[in-house]
Length: 217
Image (tube, rainbow, N blue to C red; front, side, top):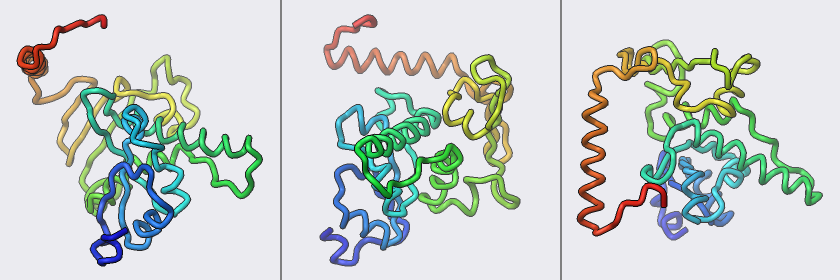
């Protein structure tokens, strides 16, 4: 609030997490053109406070989604989308059961998909280049396999992506038109070497910290 009174909040400023904010703080973010990025799974796991998905929407702030503390929680976009979808529904439906009136609408899967794509691009000031399949933008494209037993038959594309898919459904990825994953295989990445380096780094941290590894603990 003090920063707002000093006129230091600017359009495009990104506010992360946004748990436990007052109504006045949300109004400041909205009125100064700020952007919000939510990391809902880690916010719940680490007890940051109630994630701000409902507060953001009720203040006409369309959030983007991001990950945090990736060594302890799944960081993929599917996890972030599903958390946003289910938490917003839970909060609204609880208020329905409590007999409240004039409630916000339930999120649609298309809206949540936008949070994970164009809203993230907008928050980072890159929506003129990425975030949607639009002529003139970079060809950032993710192809998903929908002919799998866990998602077939396909009835609604946004619903399937948000509610049912996971990273295992990512078949092919183009970044700025360049192939980064093709038919399930990363390109230009020495995966065994990456795995080896990750294991060595983990072992070094554990050894220096004096921890005893316990894979079943």
